[in-house]
Length: 141
Image: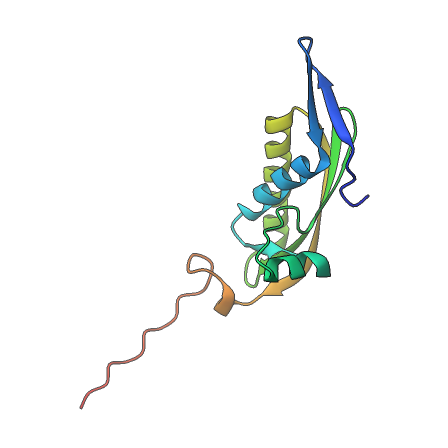
């Protein structure tokens, strides 16, 4: 897949046309992927990591898209939380991304490829994902 090329997609709806930049599709895909429980983050390149450290938000981090006039294909690079079912989480990501792109753009999504780049451990996971920790015993004087 190509790296988010600046090609416009144009849809003729009989009244006029609607165009989508590839980055629009990539943003939709990235946001839809991170909505799924178990996804820790999008894995990106060194430049997107540097942008993040500088405080610049990169909504296309970890997403590559290939868009035609009627179809789209997406590659996602993800970090998932340890302890979740990776196949179930990836399937949920694929379905959520496909639904979001098709609903918002009218393009037909032909594939959503998920590449698991890393696993983050429970200490890093939010409370709804992480295993509950035992409370420390009260100290008695």
